[in-house]
Length: 170
Image 1 (cartoon, rainbow, N blue to C red):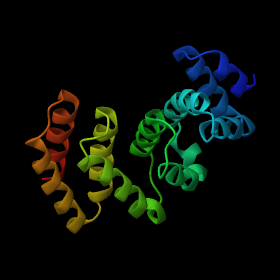
Image 2: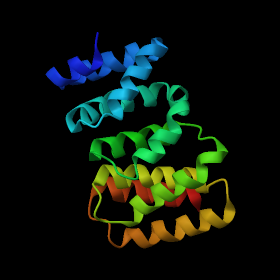
Image 3: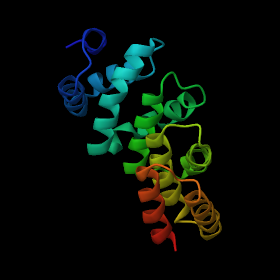
């Protein structure tokens, strides 16, 4: 299956899962998926990000070689789906220490800004809490921000994540 052609024709959960499953088993197909994920075509990027998210939840270690381009991709994301699925993957991943600072900064910036979609902010809460839990000073900073965010949390997904991670970090 040619992923780019399939993604240009269809956008469905079954296709996204099929692409994720194939990519998990064949390194050459993983490269093809990630080429679609970083593609300049908005639709291809958006649609492939679903497969990347599904793959990353089950096999996050497979995406570690793509951390640098994923980090770079979030400086000018083509679609919210790219951001959402990248954060979802990072939430599941054992992030190498060399990338923790940059990834924490990205997550924290999404967390504190109400202009981002609920899912992006929710994944950012979990990711910032996960990374900061290793570092006491950072943990206290994130905990203070999560408590502060409770005052403004309008959506249930945000309130749930805030409550969960405040408890975890306390």
